[in-house]
Length: 264
Image 1 (cartoon, rainbow, N blue to C red):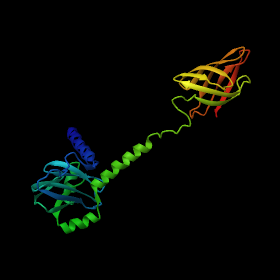
Image 2 (cartoon, rainbow, N blue to C red):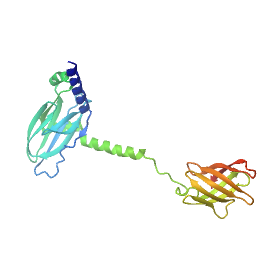
Image 3 (tube, rainbow, N blue to C red):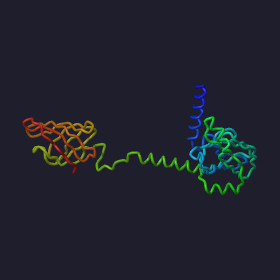
Image 4 (cartoon, rainbow, N blue to C red):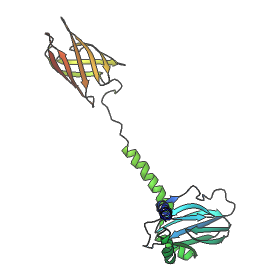
């Protein structure tokens, strides 16, 4: 008995998973290279019962689309006899070249009672309707294919917008230390530092207030300031926007001092 309940629960879960599907499948008839193409449109009515669930349209035994309340889907097939089915109910159609055919999916309330016992809460049926009725219902329905394309486009836009935008730099990000910096801090280092970065090597250029020899390691610059009587080691770190830096060095007596710089 427990095993039977397990099986029925599994079947119910399977139906729920299927009902969540939406859109066309890999078997959807694209209508390419047909000798005698016939246009077929399947419309699902606007029943409130089971409106949230989708039902699978099978064409000649293959699932071609999952359709929800108030939607329709059109496709082209080869002329001849074909079989359309939804859940337990199906209908044959003799499709003739050059004509259009319309089918309506509705709720079958009698099937709902029987199917509920087996874990399928909704019963559906399909019937052929006239072109006049088909066109009238299409006016009040949504095109499944167009909706699917719209969702795909929205997903692409969403992914594009979520990607980080490229930052507009006022300097070359490949050599962030290159430029002129207004430096404050210990009196021996203040003024304008004119720096040039080549690969990971950073040195001072002409018109620099201090002579600098250093190496860039990540976002840090480590090196030495060459004074008239002494060489001062320093370590500074550039800001995330590349517009400033701060760090430490030593004074004449070897005591730690702070350095700050702003890009000019």
